[in-house]
Length: 80
Image (cartoon, rainbow, N blue to C red; front, side, top):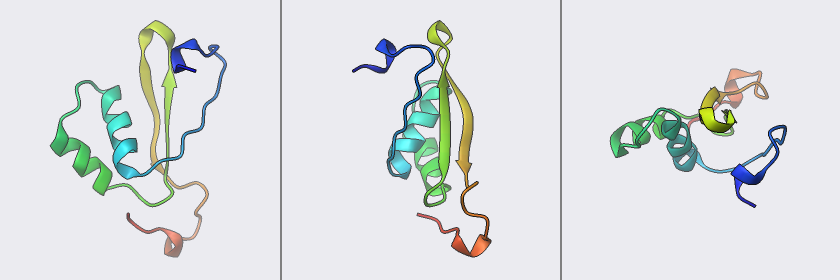
């Protein structure tokens, strides 16, 4: 089902790796250029959480990027 066909109150979880997540986040801000996307992907923590909201005609909005609320101890945080 296309995301556009979902009701406005729908919530969708997507599990992926750093590069697809960086591409998705970069698209919130406009055209995707390779170098900024790769820099963003390289800065992401393993198991980080990014959230993008969809505002119908207003398009996507970045809510959270690279968050680690589930990893309270710094020793558990690693880069990809």
